[in-house]
Length: 491
Image 1 (cartoon, one colour):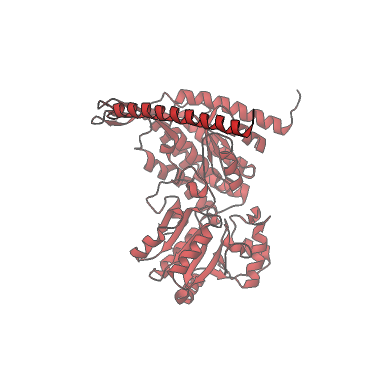
Image 2 (cartoon, rainbow, N blue to C red):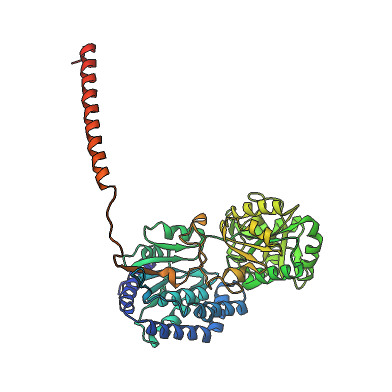
């Protein structure tokens, strides 16, 4: 049998999965809410039962993060997510207002495409599969090549669990031969109704450029401001716990710490006490040189790595027990490498004179690749907090780690691993994406009042008058033109 080139095989697989997924989704579209809930609960149970093996696979395959934290992410993407969405109305009549004689009915969007990042390969699959099925959609997963095995395993577990609970087969599928050609084929497939893109900025931009609905998320470059009224010990503990969670692979993690000069020595001492290492200028330069490639793109070999791995790669020595590396920065943008997003255990450190300077610096950092995403502040001053509420982000996280706060683990924000950045950050939504973003709403609206246009008579007379005036003006213009040409001798 003739063997086709890899790219052709991957394109054909994408087409086949899209066709199968569409057929499965058309069947699922007729399920009732009780059937859907049964399927979701089975998927959640499967995710919990396999949380450890999936976490181990992800770390072994990619080298990113920590097994224990990936276990928690798998739990958050399943059990915690289910707790939040279980009573969410996504099937049939979701609103009936007898006074307004208005009925709203939820309809599925169809077959979805989920683009999965290598940093969170299993938790993102679990999360996207569950919110898709909850809204009676099917989903085809496009994995990152460096996390193929873990992503495929998670997708297979979700599909098997759904089928075991009564869903049609192929309701959750995954490309096994990943390629840019296959991803492009899926994004442009007639069977795919919506793209949910979680990944690098280039991939998200590509999803929005194909001419069909998409929910993409922008990068996070989260500033964290420790204001003078903050509980310093807790603030530092929150930041370290957040930045070291899965070794900084979540886009909501802090990227820079901003402190006031009057508190600098106290905060530096607290970081050192809790495992932060302040690099010298020379050490900062060496680490920055290794962290980035091709400008400000993260070196994949240092994404989600421990400080020890980063220090060894940079050729510097750090104290035993170091949890996070901090490098002082004096500006934002070119020449200040730690002012960019770093999905690893490295933080930029800034000192300012007061909250007003902190405010200006925060905006600069956000405009340096994180606008629309998240901002963290540690303060007890509610009045000042509202001033920072004006920042160009859609998640303002107060007295908590931005990682846990942004994904809805330590806050009341919706549990999610797709965090919209709104139009400011190039996203179609500013929300944490839930099943409610994946339904169409049909409205049955009865007439509740008779309409008579009170301006109809006056309007007609005005039109007639305008016609008359316009005709006269045209005739006058013609006369003037004829006279002009006669006087000028033109034919």
